[in-house]
Length: 599
Image (tube, rainbow, N blue to C red):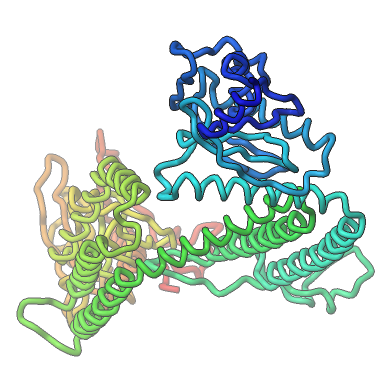
């Protein structure tokens, strides 16, 4: 009777395999009693784990979708289980299946993996067997519908992966194969060591060819050292030639960048060599072969991504290159035009030579800003989140720091186009008196007579009166004036004559135009006289005034006339003057001269 029930079950398409060496009961009553055991064989877990998960209807097993779980064996992924069978989750199925595989391989060589189609109750799927022992049951709900593969194809792929893992497990036990892997790994390690040594040596040579960051210039003969090594054979440290852009020396910055670039290149090459070494080493042994294949696949995917990105970026890069070349041509033409006007080789009605430099800088800057604005959308990656973040950061920095910068730049334009001063002119700005050495977009540099460089921000220049002593200097020279106060008891004609005589004695004062005297004010205690003279160059002003003041004192002392400066609170009984016999009182020598000559 039981044999007849088994025949009927087989005719109904229900396979009754042996599960872990145990025979399934026959007959329909026995079949119902063996339902938990059949479920165990299909989902791949022990009967004790799912005996209580009976379907609401006799003979029907509920199947649903659970959280996917990956089934791995021998460091390889075999399949991803997605079906929740009879309330048993995919992760539980994976854990039980791995135990089942371990039990089967403990008593069997594990040489063959195959899949057998089978149905039971409402379940239809495949048995995956190892050496005839079922270890894994797969149902259509385990299939990934997003791959485009059929359920049968995915089952076949799982069997192939399991067979590959079994083959790797068998190879791992082969002593010749292990010895071969060890030999190849040793050779690869030696080659890696040699290559790393070469990278370090090349990096060291490149670093030695660069100037040190804190370099100084010495000559072999000037080296003093307590060592016994002759100074003549010691290498001399030479400071590299400066690279100036907009008045800034970029040589230290470029040297630092070269040091960083060489170190980064060396580290990058070392990392690449180690990466390939790991890929090769992992590929020599069956168990770690998936790791090596994963590293190789990652590198290939990375290179493919870079290549694909480069190909996609070629049109945009070509557009940016064309914009850059055209902009460069336009800038060179504009720069040449303004430089010609600046040198005076060409004159145009709407542009002065003095303002050509500022106009050139402003025009070139605007052209480049326009070119960058046009080229920005074509820059590879300009639509990425990184570029957007950089744009926001740059915008924030400009917003926070542009107020003072724009103020200085606009003040520089005002100074340039107002032509208030230019390089080489003698000017006075506030308490600063000196010769203009540089007029920049942000500041102006003035060199004082004491050889001090004073940097005046352009905004300060715009807000301060500027006295220019060189602007009106012509073939008659520059005008210099000095003031004295003499008492009312001295005839003004005598004062005029004495001041004129002092001017005639001054070597730096021109005879033509002739010096002259002006009476500026009639104060309470004395008139104020101003002597006006001409000198050849405005730069001689300081020395000319010093010599002129000395001769004024000498002439007034010769004629016994008292100079009233500084103010008197009361008039002394005797005149305040120095007799001629006392002019060279000690420690002054008779041949000494009070006048200062220009160096």
